[in-house]
Amino acid sequence: MFSFTSTGGKIDSSINRGIVPYIFRQGVQNYHSIGSLLPIKGTEPKFFQLYIYDTENEISYRQKCFGEKDQSISIDSDIIEDIKLMSDSNNVLVRSYKMRGLLHSHICLFMNSDNKLPTVKFIDPIISVEIQDIIEDPKLYSFVNEFMIHGPCGAENMNCPCMVDKKCSKSFPKQFCNHSSVDQNDFSLSRRRNDGHFVEKSGVRYPSMVRLTFHLPNQQQIVYGEDDDIDYVLDKPSVAASKFTSWMECNVIDSEARELTYVEFHTKFVWILNGRFWKRRKVGKAIGRIHSGSPNLGEAYFLMILLNKVKGPTSFDEIRAVNGETHSSFRDACYALGLLDGDKEYIDVIKEATHSGYGFYLRFLFATLLMCNSMSKPEVIWENTWEYLADGILYNQRQRFKSPELSLGGDELKNLTLFKIEQNLL
Ligand SMILES: [Zn+2]
Image (cartoon, rainbow, N blue to C red; front, side):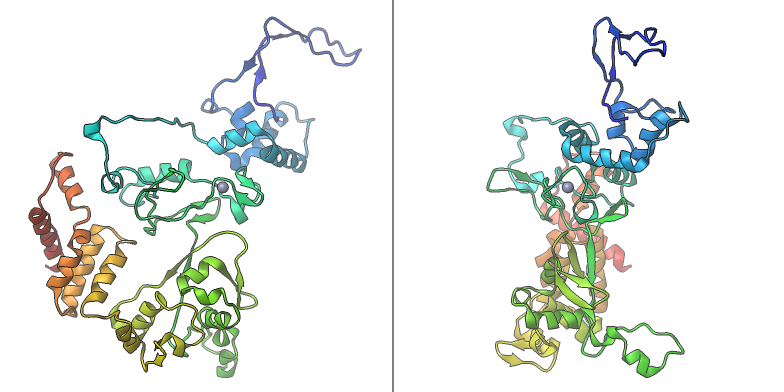
């Protein structure tokens, strides 16, 4: 039930006739018979296949190894579980097999100098560790989902073989980074953008994301029934302490919280729903995302912009304060901070959107801004963002003409991008 291999050689069973204690006698050369890594189709996993095949149902497979042959042997599944957990955390072989999961090879390529990838710009389109778009490439998405996702480990699964001293020894989940780079130890860090794609494994979502709600003063959302009494509704704890207002209250009492923006705050603090308060995060990581909004939202939109900048405010007034002066609106505070300088906000909107969307989405966004007629100088915004808006155009042309070497001049690329934007306007 817990062995990695079967024993090769000839076992002589004839010696046991039931009158003396069991004797194990083996002849010919002794060896370990390892066999296939995965069970043959239609058969159950055995030996070390049990360590890597469908590990979620490992216990029942282990029981089946014995139970089906001889119904008189029934082994307590709790005992199997205990032994399994012990070997998961202590047996070097088990740990290394479980961590591999999928067979893979490490290949070192020495590139001819003509083919070297000299800068990040060349490396990024080829090498990344990102979750695929399920609609654009469902097959690759399912491969990544099935074979390439580490864990779950951390608070969700303290028994994962990677866990050492209550921490993932492989440092998962990893930080996002927009471009490949090399750290101080010359260890390469591949591109890992926070593009909103996610997978769910054993009920745990990767990357875990918290939607950050915010609201204007006294405009917190309340859920109530049609027959609820108004006093009862106003007495609801969610009215007195929304996540957002409690964040500001936490800033009053916690000096560390005051150093953080609303998004950063969520990486260090966790919301305790029952008590409706924030507590320092001890385990796990989460990524905060503020609900995105458009300028049509008015003051709420300007509050959203400020929340990305202001650290540790203790009140709405403090969010509106710039250099000691409390402005009468969030919009004025944005102006005072230079955030609405000319069309800068639109440029920022497009640049910020590159974190969550591909070229076609950005072009759609630019077309929408044009239709809203709210940009004072669209050509300035175009000049500052066209390289982002052109994302994917070269790739599409290469696919279209089946020419991976195809290159486009700046003007060609601009024209094709404008053509695509125009299609959104028609
Ligand atoms: Zn881990």
